[in-house]
Amino acid sequence: MRIVVLAGGIGGARFLRGLKSAAPDADITVIGNTGDDIHLFGLKVCPDLDTVMYTLGGGIHEEQGWGRADETFAVKEELAAYGVGPEWFGLGDRDFATHIVRTQMIGAGYPLSAVTEALCARWQPGVRLLPMTDDRVETHVLIDAADIDGSGAERGEGRKAIHFQEYWVRLRASVPAHAVVPVGADQAKPAPGVLEAIADADVVLFPPSNPVVSVGTILAVPGVREAIADAGVPVVGLSPIVGDAPVRGMADKVLAAVGVESTAAAVAKHYGSGLLDGWLVDTVDAGAVEEVEAAGIRCRAIPLMMTDLQATAAMAAEALALAEEVRG
Ligand code: FO1
Image (tube, rainbow, N blue to C red; front, top):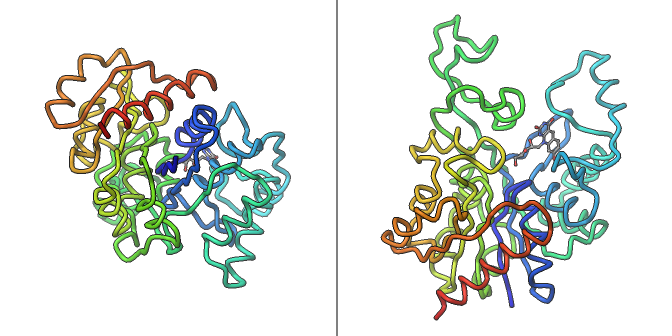
């Protein structure tokens, strides 16, 4: 069975671990979000691709969910001693090596997709990991200038666009987001293999990743949404919202920016029946099943907390079972 998964960072990576366990013989292609990518210290950092690669390759910091296990921060401390920031973004020494290799290869002319393949040769994630695009896309968040120091509010600027990582990590999504813009997405082309993998898939899955800044950004690359809708295969998603709150992260803040309520049903309707055939909600949201089905999306309520590998594999198995049910 050929499965395509649209993945963000931590939620997507943990779901993939369960999927590999539930479907050990499946041929899995992961289309990773690169809108979170950031250039720091002259290096290209791809948080979501790395989170998937490290998680499936056994190098992730398990508790944190991002970055390397057994990490040290000597380089970051040395940079800070020179007064070189930002200090709010935690790049560890082991992780730095990944960004150095990536940046060196890109400088030598390799596209991000080829670089990702080369990095995965070391980590052997057991899936084919493709960036959504080889082109530069950067998610920016529009906030009130007054909500950030030195932002220009004193110069009368009303709103200011900041990099997604600054919103997420530095500000911890603590201020209202007025818009989320995947800058460059409208000009981006899907990376080699992305459209082919979708066309060849037997099922497409949306893990419980952020529907706006993860899955939404991948769908913003021209051609991807259309390829999924036209593939003629079941598309099944898992709700990242349980009991009207994000399972992890601060998805509610960016959902508000696009005018979507933080409920399992609202997220399903945001994707819409033109894209989504099946939707899994948590048992606490069983009351939402009727509303989702009324919107033309087959819906089931099952436990959706990725507490351990077994629970996550059970979720993945349910997603595949719902796909089969939809296929009819
Ligand atoms: N998340 C944090 O909350 N704080 C950090 O300092 C941080 C650093 C970081 C470095 C490399 C990396 O691959 C991921 C990192 N993340 C950090 C996670 C990341 O900001 C986000 O969770 C994702 O981009 C959202 O998927």
